[in-house]
Amino acid sequence: MSFFKKIFSSEKKATLDKGLEKSKSSFFEKLGKAVAGKSKVDDSVLDNLEEVLVTSDVGVETTLKIIDRIEARVAKDKYLGTEELNLILREEIAGLLSEINSGNDSEFSLAPNHKPYVIMVVGVNGAGKTTTIGKLAHQFKKQGHKVVLGAADPFRAAAIDQLQVWAERVEVPIVKQNMGSDPASVAFDTLESAVSNQADVVIIDTAGRLHNKVNLMNELTKIKRVMHKVVPNAPHEILLVLDGSTGQNAFEQAKQFTAATEVNALAVTKLDGTAKGGVVIGISDQFQVPVKYIGVGEGIEDLQVFNKMEFIDSFFKK
Image 1: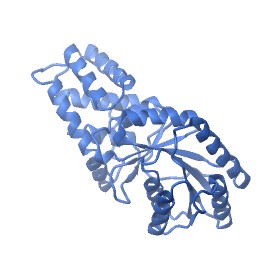
Image 2: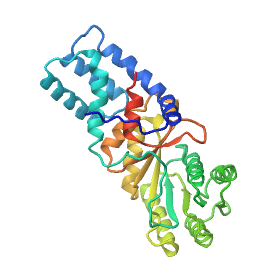
Image 3: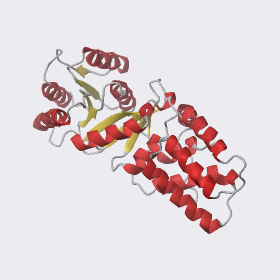
Image 4: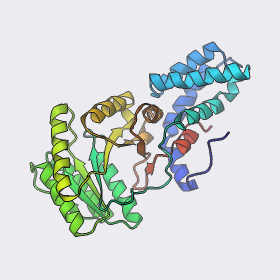
């Protein structure tokens, strides 16, 4: 059974291929060394493969699941040539990820029955939060949605300025207050403005601090409580932005943030500048929270919805 059907347009696929180029070439270089001089997949090849996957930031638990699947296949097929290993890896990782109920989208979309649909964005400074917000705003606007941005990170002047630049670039309104204002107050104003202007989607930037989990939890809880006064059940999405180039560190951040607040979507950024793209496979497998978006370049169109089959296809395509 093939998991791989053409889902993305050729232009989108080319962007994804290019964004994963470093991860892919690093992976194939390691894989080449792992099977050097071997014609069949045996225990020593599997041991080497385990090391290749772990050092490609797939994560230990996910790697062991993949190795188990390949061992089962070796036992069943009796003989597997090393030249088939790449194809087998692709199929077994696709099989593993097909068991999770996310990563199937091909286009940007909003959940129905929520107007405005409110997205609260969290993540440490430098992960690419503001850029992700700007690119998301662009995608939703392109689909004809009315978008409002909220600058609820009032502790860093740079964060407000950066979001302002994106708002101007994408030509969407932004709600902000002076430096040092209460983030919950900014969130409240943003939602009031969105409701009165009949906006379809609101994206709110929050402070990227993780040095104190209790403070972070309290701050985010307060922002949510204030939002409820304007839009019941808001935020509908809490999007955690992770810097993919930090590899296993992204994993740790995901653990900490998901413990601090009810994160229900992930964006993994900066994959084009790193060989650590394997982290997306591990995060997809390990977390109950779906990877929704990936950043595969610096251009405004280079934030993509994460489609697991297209991702695996690009990652393991020779």
